[in-house]
Structure formats: C-alpha cells, structure tokens
Image 1: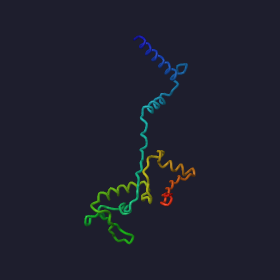
Image 2 (image 1 turned 45 degrees about the horizontal axis):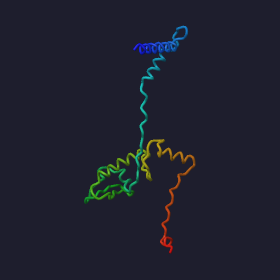
Image 3 (image 1 turned 90 degrees about the vertical axis):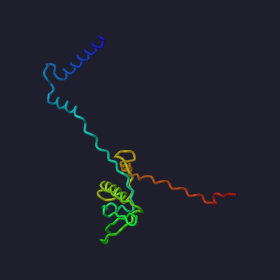
Image 4 (image 1 turned 90 degrees about the horizontal axis):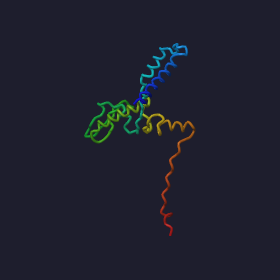
Length: 175
C-alpha cells in the first residue's frame, strides 16, 4: 500500500514540475499568455463539427410514362372502366388521355412522381435520358469517382466480352 501511495506522490510531483517549467521561465516569471491558454482549453473542450452528410443517389431506370408522370397532378390521374389513365396536355395544346395500367394504380403513379422529383432535383430539374445506376458517396468503391478517374487518364472502360456463337449441327456431328 505504501508503494502505491509513493508512486502517486511521485507522479504528482513530476506533473507539477513539468507544468511549472512550461508556465514560468527560470526567473519565475509567467511566460504563457493566460488568454491564449483559455482559448486553447476552450478549443479542446468544444466537440468537433459533425461530419458532412452522406448523399446516396438512387438508381433511375427510365419508364415509358415518366414524362407524363413527372408533371402529373392528382386531378390528372383518373380511373375509367377499372383502368388507370393519365391526362396530359399534348404539343397541340389539347388534353389527351394516356393509358397507365389495368386496375387502380393511382398510388403507384404518385409514388413514381415523388421518385422522379427526387431524380430531377439532382439533375438540374430535368429527367436524364438514360438509366443511372445507384451509387454511394464520392470515393466509394464503384462510386462515380472511380469512373471519372479512368476517363481522365484517357482509358475507356473495357467492353464486355462477346458471346461465343453456338455450334451449328454440322460441326457437332462428325461420323
């Protein structure tokens, strides 16, 4: 027990001697500005800022009715004869009815509209004209940065291997 008490006292004396050497010079005058010490202590006690949010883009596969669904309102989706139709204004300025699906699919239309609005928010208010694979944040394996780095280096992605042609019946039979 005495050994433990002695070790604690020696550790305390060593700590005081070290701190006294940092705060005073050999004449005993204060060397460190107390305002700077308070600023450093306050900086050390404040928690670090939270990391930036991770943005994950959803996959987008174009559909045949996306142009109509992106601008649809609730009054434009109707059920006629048990089928779901979408009313839209055509290039001629007249309203037209477009078939969507058999049965009541109003909920599906509005869910797709919300999904299209999220995609459009990431693409300057327009729908992309091609499919987009879902990807994680920048630098994530398989994310957008990997493809950009290959293209910047002047390397085109490797083409998919061609399928082998099927053997004809004449080549198989050898008798």
